[in-house]
Image: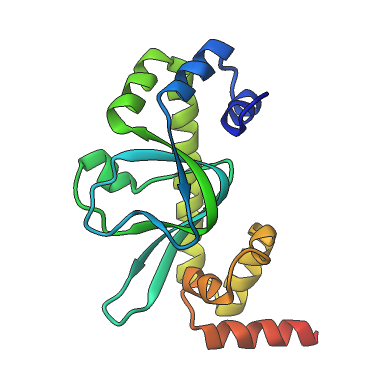
Amino acid sequence: MHTVLETYLKTQTDLSDEAISYIKSLAVPRTLRRNECLLNVGEICRHKIFIETGLLRTFSTSADGNEHILQFAPEHNWALDAESYDKEIPSKVSIGAVEPSQVLCWYKSDFNTLLVEVPQLKVFSDRIISRNMHYSRQRMLTMLSATPEEKYEDFVRTFPEYLSRLPLRMIAAYLGMSLKTLTRIRHIQLQR
């Protein structure tokens, strides 16, 4: 029986069964409850995280208590605070489970060993990093130039599956608007 990671790597890469087994052997499984954090602000991010099932969010909380969500990571995706992980400095964000989640974690030293010993994984990892950079750039442009209505329309178009999985307050926090504004936009769209 194939695990989620095996199936994911077999469909996304040309890695051999032996390489996939080696990658799996260094992973540490974790089960997260809803709202449980895997990384808290001020901690050093020491793991690359693969989400087998569930949904994670990367977020920060401002002094006034408002949450700002930078990213959602559903199953078959990766999560980490890249700056904290790369520079080994305290994280400015938290990573937590939106819903009960099963994840696999690799310590930095183990993942670095994998990148050296499994060159195809390095190529795949670089492709994911590049994709995430493009996504982050597009998200930043949207956040800077789009109206609240356009931001919501882009979210619905890009992530339709999230609508049934996320509370409205998290969608609003991701879009950088108040819950009241998001509710108004949704109400207007429903009346069309």
